[in-house]
Length: 480
Image (cartoon, rainbow, N blue to C red):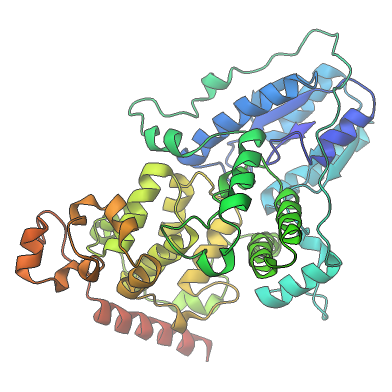
């Protein structure tokens, strides 16, 4: 069983099928960081991967399935391990990143030619990218009809996930060589910047299921109306577990549907909203499958004419959370500390970089790729392009977020800003999202000196908005 982005034993169709053969099973994970392979994980995701593999190894041990760790090109390494084990059948969960798809297709053909049976299964999405086509035979480029079609294809029912398989027969042959996980250097050492990540995240499918239950018990009711609140309880924070397959989207969908049903239909709107988020993730994978260069090329080619700025100073201020806009700075500091931020915060910070600072979305996407524990190969570029206005389903003129009103609406009491930008904690609520509007006496009483203890805004909101609109006009002219 070749594990990839499905690091769990429950609801793992490939693993269950392998165990069902009645033969001994070996598990393999390959750290493929070759230039020609799938996009290698960033630093924060590598930290998360270490924990996920540690947890998976323990779960597999209970099933009499040893985990082999190897580093190298995926296809070559799998072929080598198959030869060492004299294996006759290989199982895996399908991937949808174009480079990974190409590797899997080539490997499957080569193995079949040598007499090795290959069986692949869905596992990371509710609906696979090739399962839906539009009426004209193309692929969906707008989310709402995609979501409607996906729900119709599912028949309106959430499929019941599989339990973990029973233990496999014990393996009696000597084990093949396996790398020591610690030798992969997935964890930071000097400096050790992962302290905040360790406080925020746990690993493995047991922890993911526990987090899911906590969300359903204390965050699901009211999700539709409260999910955008930055300091609320309504977010599931399950995206890192989804990213590495410690939990499956089918498990989330089924559990949420069951929970909604238990409430006599009272939570139907919350379930529908939550399910849409799962289908949005599928939509991002749908786009990447059909547009392989999603992370490097504007989905809408007219956006090639957008006049991006090159400003190392502004980009550094954004990364460090020193823009002078408290809601932006709070989110960027949360990202650096915990490797994660709320979805609303991601939209606010991405909008600020691309609209207020006019810095290319690809720079922001690369920063998120390196700093997010849940950095996903499809969702990360698709969401950045959506916010920038260059992607699918975009309405750029309506998404120049005002950081002040976003803060007032989604962090009304300023608790989120006060937590992550403590130098502003003494400001009253009415000024917490725009400290430059506070009278001198209020700033002094709060211990805030603009330009000293906290930066002044690096760009004027009105001027930045006007510049962004002019940039959008350039893209419109380019398409005429």
